Length: 578
Image (cartoon, rainbow, N blue to C red; front, side):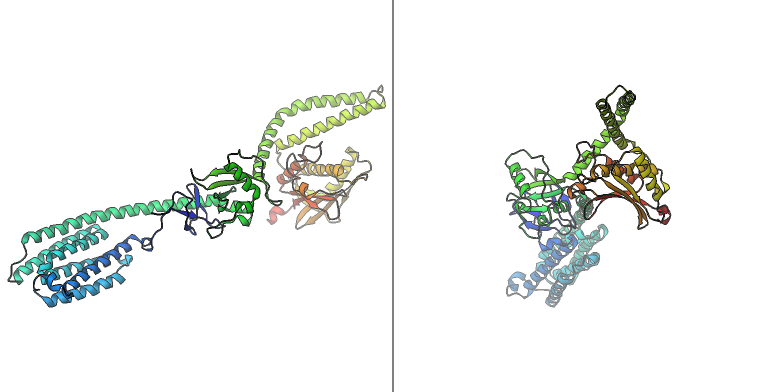
């Protein structure tokens, strides 16, 4: 058979499917010679692409042309006297029938392969074959055995293609026609007719071969129907696999021994860039040129080194990936590389951590709060005593401050597990901002720092839970007072209330140094903090509370310095307008 053929696949942003151990294109696959795979489909000639009935009609027509050619040579070749071995009873009849049969066979060769009219085509052809065979047998008695033998194939082929009753009818018709020709020859000729035993044997042969061919044809058609059914099931599975592969978030690469990329799916192209896309040629891109570090790890894995667990950063604007390597087939030179997005893995780890932390915090909340409440109460009693000097009172203040800090940490952790339901109300944000500043200044000493509300004359209403909004704004203002100031200068915090695109907005602005872009991208991740005293849960909880109220919380960069956290809330008539 020569070299095995393997699919040279080009996965683009269209159809991709997964065959056992390898991807194959469903509609736009290109089969090319490749010595890398041990198995693969063989090349199919152009004739094999046709349907089975059309192909069988073609061969039957070719055989009919061969029969006509033999009869023509028997009558018109220079060796006709030797081949005929006798005189014809009706030379004109033999000549006319032979010329007609030659023309008919050529017409059937060019125009008799329409499978849509299979029954009519086969019946017309086999009826003409039987009639011609009978006439030639009558006209050339010496050629009767050979003509009868040739007719056996025509009858068998026709019975194979026809349904049961039509096939049996053809076999019976051939038998009756052959017997009638013998009877006519006996009464029309004065010479010695053929032996009756020969005629009987040919009649029985027509019937037996016809019935056997009918059974073979029925089995062939059933097998073809079963193959078509299985093919349809395989095609459906291929489409399902195609959909699965297209929706996969894991990148897949197939790399040969030379380091050339033979296959890449959409996820891999998105992670590695357009350079990883396989072109419509035999030569793929070199992995060394696309991702040098990935090529180095692949080579180390091939050399027997243990797979490195650290994520791989391919480009500054691309997410980190976690590569995994495997061999495509046993003994194959092709390697399979799976590229997992490390950010997805980290998000899963964070969700598991948060779930475990929520359950853990619920069980420890009372155990921690009770000792804290006792310590805080004892500190308050000690502060009322007059026997302490200023240094001792300073130490008591530190104890009280750390108790408050520890209680805040417990509250933040409990916020993850509570997931309290929002009770939205129609809230006047202008009045809320002014009331919040008054309450905050009374409960928290901001000393030289400034906190003010910027409201307009127009009333701004929002559909939000006031308790949740108060908690979110408290977190943002507290962060702004701690981190939104320049060195040696007091903090200047403003709460700006306005309306934009039928949504109510609150901006918390500061005049600090701003937030770097690398840090801003991770602000709302749980447990992310730039302070050694923070927990990294404040902004995360604030964003979750906003989501519970169908609001959004985002960081907005301020040109010229400073930071801005914007809360966008639905208006009071948002449900009605929607």
